Length: 298
Image 1 (cartoon, rainbow, N blue to C red):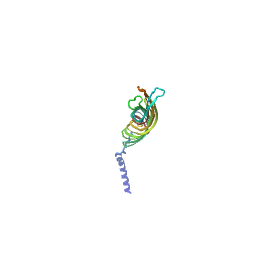
Image 2: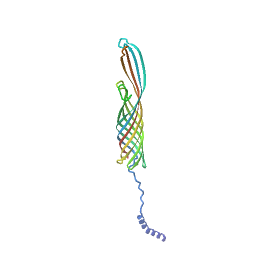
Image 3: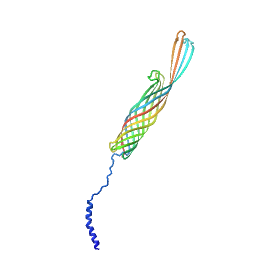
Image 4: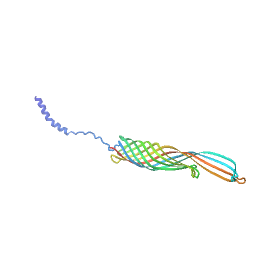
């Protein structure tokens, strides 16, 4: 009994001292995990404006069929001339020409996408749709020089719209993101073509074609606030090749030489006809620089 009383008295004496000692000991706080204020993960939507330098290669492939009929008459001016000879020759030659049209103009549209950030690496996907004012044309003549009567084609192009669906891979540094991008591109090109003979018959062709190709590029983006970002981007777009039949156009001339042998009263009549059948093959590529503004959903 005396022993229990002694232990109780000792504990009562030591506990205040131990409590004070514990209060004086330093307390180690849990580690603070830093929070990145500029995280790129999440959905975003925005708009953009820019300028483009397009290039449409135009190939004219066809044939020029020339028929020459030569007749020789005696007494051509009399009521009943005498036909002495009638010879017809036909020549078919390839009609091939190459040229380029420049399609430059402003563009604007919208984009939306999603980013996922892991460490400093950012992966994403983005889609956009653009309206453009790009247009231009070219004239190709056979042979070059565009003299009266020469076969020719005049092609006028317009890029009505285009859109892309691209992946993005980037590297984040503080509030900045530098990225590469690439994927699918689709666009609609309008063609108005006049093919024929200068100063003679001509055939008009108008078509609209939706083409698919690819887009590659790079850019940089930066946070303005926690939700708003601004970007500058370069894209190269190739919409592939399109073919269109330009139809056929014909022309004819008649030359009368009378009398070409005065002593005998001979008259030579030459009828020349030409038929141009052609097809147009074109390939479109575009270089684009644009600036955009995005809103990132929290």
